Image (cartoon, rainbow, N blue to C red; front, side):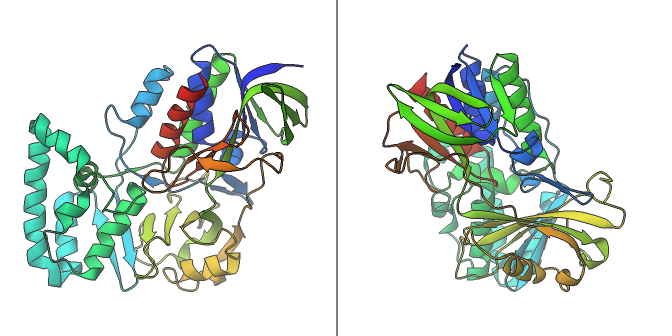
Length: 408
């Protein structure tokens, strides 16, 4: 029976990162994906002529020397190019804010949309520029900015509830945490540096990780689901469709239960005038953790949708995983009136368990940091789980690194 150092059930960035890091150290991992190919296994969907992204196209611009750069440097996989987003929109219950690439226009738009906060915003942006300059020039300022939260900065200004909700929504989307927990330097960077946009970036990163695994002698098996994982003496027997194998460590790479995704192929005529390709939407001020992100394929991407149509990926964050498709369409319809009349196809892909594990195995968080736990350890030694977040990759990569320290 073939033996591996690590068996990963499920294909996403956390599991792939761990397998790539392990393979770069001369160890042998195997990764199982139920889908027929990488894009499908990671959460993308090709259906009726539409090609849907596995998550939001909008993301934080990668920082030089940041989490992604460090990962790719460690596995010697080069870099992934990122393009600035042309702009995006933030929709609150009572207004929609269009944010251009040019940050001066950003500021003008906020002053217009939040007229009651105009004076506070002028002082805020002046202070923000000064703070950014101090962080860039001084080591001491940079040191403390990494350890202070953004909440201390925001408390200096008597912002309205609506403007506070705007900043909190940006922080929850881009940094995956509320401002009271976000590091000050990253919060400042978020407001002053344009984000990136790549409709299929998760697939691009995953492809690079998979190539590293294969180059170093590991295996990635698509369409080969795992039926059962059985603990043996100091190892695990993994029963896959292609046969059984032994693994020293088992990792379940599973979608975050607090997220669900709607894929909708829509006719272009239903897209409201002025609506951008990327929208972050908060439906209710009273529920700041429950928000949506909408990403439309670009109208120039002929491979993503038939003529006169667009592919739309909607990620629902913090809501019930069992949210009915009709309710998802209704929520998105608040931004796109008559949506249900112009949908060509729509799909909600259910979360299918990657493997059956013993009923007496329970998981506890290895590190429950800000924004919720990502890495979990089973009550049987050698089995772990990563909750894969579609909105951000940094947490999953950091979880993979933490796991590497435990098993290498």
